[in-house]
Length: 84
Image (cartoon, rainbow, N blue to C red; front, side, top):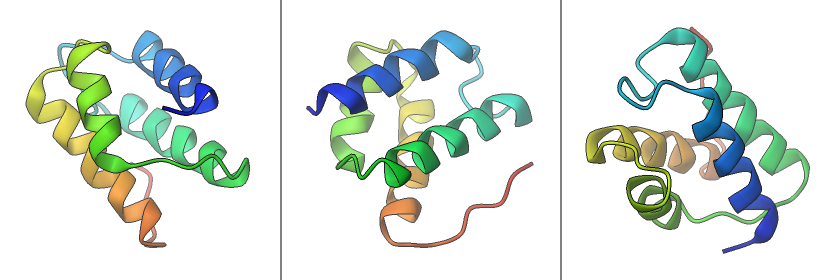
């Protein structure tokens, strides 16, 4: 895993409520911000690798890690993700 990606993921899980994942609009928007920074900085990322990291090292619930993976895929596909 890219060191910049892991740093962003660590920062992300430090900011959000791990019990609710990204269901809270504040945490959802933090996730958007993270992916926008990654893309802006040309940091490569694999949505599945992110899911695994979040579920293991990030200690997110599996369904929450999947939600972040789905968002990562949208960003990778160049789709627009709206803020809440």
